[in-house]
Length: 147
Image 1 (tube, helix red, strand yellow):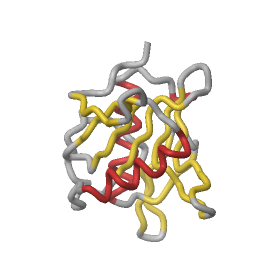
Image 2 (tube, rainbow, N blue to C red):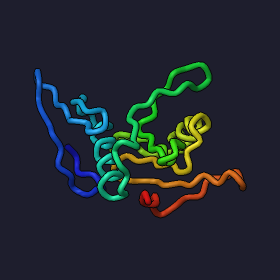
Image 3 (cartoon, rainbow, N blue to C red):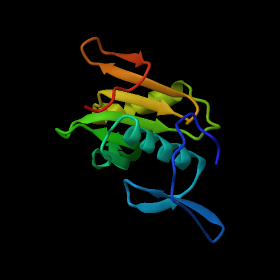
Image 4 (tube, rainbow, N blue to C red):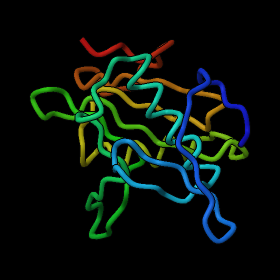
């Protein structure tokens, strides 16, 4: 798979019927290895290894209800109190991150109310903090580590 701008991590990979699969430590199962899934799995490892987020606080492809339709958020990280800490939207590396990616994650966050947002295609990462007092999004250099 393509080299991403995350540190190098080891993954459990397998092939079955000429399809590639990667083991998701959060969902505890092998999932199809697409370009977007490669980004998602690297991002999960980054959150666990570098940001010290316990994998029990991470949900992957969580279903939410938005305007009477079911959507799936790529990665959702909870605080210890159960509130939403971080919402992550992953794109395949060949997808340019544009305004529609931010529009999508902001729509999802209207339901979830996470404190931080991350949009990544594995090459470029954008980190944001939601400032509810000023009703705006502040871009950050990085997502704070879990305490």
